[in-house]
Amino acid sequence: MKRICTAKEAVQDVRDGASIMVGGFMCCGGPSGLMDALLEKGVKDLTLICNDAGLPDKGIGKLVVAGRVKHLIASHIGLNPAAGQKMHSGEMKVELVPQGTLAERIRAAGAGLGGVLTPTGLGTEVEKGKRIVEVDGKQFLLETPLRADFAMLSANEADRYGNAYVAKSARNFNPIMAMASDRVIVEAARVVEPGQIDPDRVNIPCVFVTDVVRGGRHG
Image 1 (tube, rainbow, N blue to C red):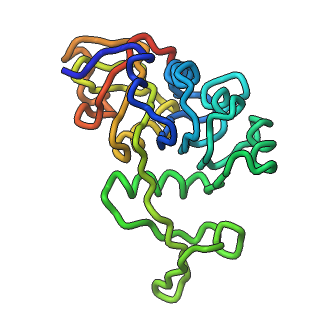
Image 2 (cartoon, rainbow, N blue to C red):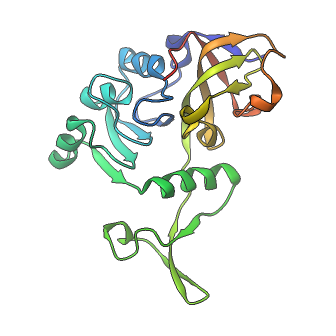
């Protein structure tokens, strides 16, 4: 059985400077309760790895607005004006990664790979400082794996073993982030007994999960 706890209890071990993967896509499938708990805890200098910078008043966006994020690795930041302002002022380092590349870098870490080869970004700003590898006469960028200290994810359901079900498009980054982090916290809208989730529906297996937060508002 995994620990079933509150969001406040789940983030107690998060320290200043931690790296955190956060599931979600424009706040869909994001762990809003865990983000609020981080904000309340007061941790700072965080490195966040996520799809986007959220909205100013939701999820990840609240941490960005409050100045708690030192380094943001994401595919876009346009929905949160504060992210652009902090990037241009130098207050927050922003690494923009093409969305598919971001997913594959996370997946590579979870699979134990040394990186992925992609043509995306060749001849652009994305190429700067990266190794170019030639395969069969074609050039590719070598993109390195992304890992984190924590993954904070959202699920529709989780059982007491930690098996979790994420529905439809809310899956986005949640399952692959579970494989690429040292500690995985799942915020579940509903916590059920073992056996109540059809095994075919489990897309975050319990082997990756450390803690389950009860009562999260999914999405």
